[in-house]
Length: 240
Image (cartoon, rainbow, N blue to C red; front, side, top):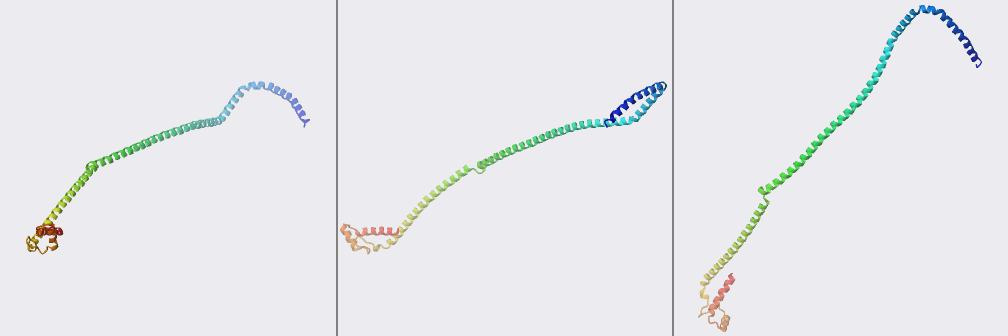
């Protein structure tokens, strides 16, 4: 294998000068024909180039269209991505703005409700206090009622004391009247029994001899009268 490679290289070196000579000979021989056929060759080449160009116009156009489509698609994708990000940002910011507005509205409603509840509570308290004051002052005055009850109690005590005094007076008058009636009745009864009483000259049936003796000892001259008075006082005490 190593011996064959140098041999092949030597054969190629021998053929190259021969091919160059043939090319020059052919070139010298055909130069005249080439000069005569030059316009036709140029025209033919031009026509062939035109034909090739016309054949490749559609391919070049399709390739250019494909390149432009790809470029436009890429640019549109970049623009779409940018616009999409911008739209998302705008929507996010707008939703945040709407959320803050809604929060402010809700907060204002809550504050208004709290203030309304506060003032309603204060108004209710004031009305309650005013109704209580008006009721105590005009409808159910505690102090007037207390004063009235005090006056009623005082008047009741006064009336009770007056009634007790009147009852005592009436009781005393009734007792005095009853005593007087008893005395009058006793005197009426005793007045009809005068024959049983003692006199200065004759002793009554109720005079005991022992009493007469005691009276004589004491030096009383009228035992009958003193006995009569004593008997009357004893009767009165027994009746009362």
